[in-house]
Image (cartoon, rainbow over all chains, first blue to last red; front, top):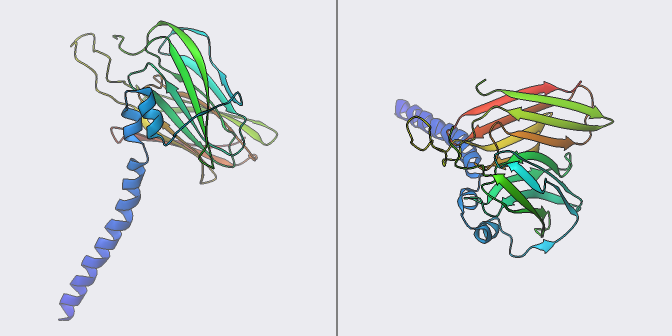
Length: 154
Length: 104
């Protein structure tokens, strides 16, 4: 009888331990919005991030070359002057999957990011800023690409 | 070179410029191998997090459209000498990489 109870206790504790370690690990993998990142239409991927409509705003500052010679490395610099910016999304309209990156900011970071992206062909670069009140502001830039940066051979 | 991260932190007053270069192929799944003529499978960083003194400051979700060996530049507030910055990433092959630096 006593033996049985202790066995039950160990099974229970092992179960709890597994649940506690497994759940955070699983949520870590699920944070990446797979459907939005894999969507192949720009409108579709904008919908999938939860934006019903976009407010055009020049407070979203985009620094990007008008003509990019090499589509594999297009430098992009974004600064959001909108207060309570929560996240910045980068979309490339004509890429096989338009949503390129998402950056989530906190109170101890400026809503600024500078990175390098790939562009398949000349396309519109759309930057969407999400505020804490779930409002979506957007700004666009046209980028001409001389050599595309997706399917090249090594 | 595998799983390597290069970082540079420059402090101006209390604002820290954090620049990083992560060595990662970031394969889009559209490129063909020149020898075998087969498509190289997708392999890219999904999540990259920046922690300042063990609190999450920036979480970035990247995709296959980010350039190979991603370069990222962020600006952090209220940083003082001696603060610890931790950068860690996780890709679609469940590979990970991290680096910890102390602000000088």
